[in-house]
Image (cartoon, rainbow, N blue to C red; front, side, top):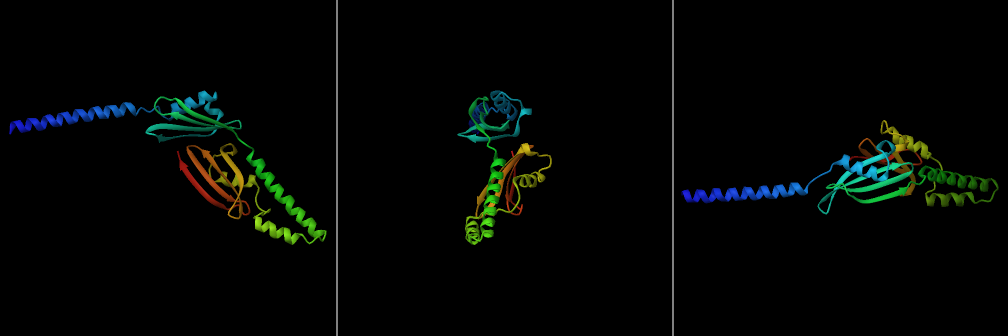
Amino acid sequence: MKMKKFVIMTMVTVMTAAAAVVFTGCGAGGKDIGKEAALEAALNDAGVSESDTTRLRVSSERDDGRKVYEVRFDVEGTEYDYEISGTDGQILSVDTERISGGNEGADAAVNSGAEQGNGQNVDQQNGNGQNSGSADAGTQNGADTTGISIEEATEIALERVPGATADDIRIKSDYDDGKNKYEGDIIFEGKEYEFEIDASTGTVLEWSEERY
């Protein structure tokens, strides 16, 4: 009986020691530099300070069993996207992209639509009889020239996020499902907001929030 107890106690001791070794190994491989260090690595590489940035976002994910931080921010018309190793702070990848003038493009699209509408009215006044045909074509193409400007759509979106400014929003015009709309996102104080706004009525079609 004593021999049996001794064997059981020995087995428990061995299993406990093995578990401790495994746990210790996992802990060593699970080193995490943290969000602040990942952000610092990205900012140092870009040669900017945090105060220079807008639309700053730091999030993490697991890739092939390792933790990776994704750091995104805008500086003076350039978007930076970094992937930082969560183990040692090494920069795994970096992408930079010049931000196009989305507002100007949207305004151009609205102005273009207005010009087309004016052209149709001129044809009607001249008696060319093309207004009806043009209107039908416009309806088929979903070209609705009336509605809100991109500035108004921007105000509608920003009103939903107290404290956010034009520096925190990215917005552009789009045509989908037979509708002209504005779509974009706001990154502000640890949250990302995505939205779609009807360009004809100003109605918010979609709105989502995600904390990162």
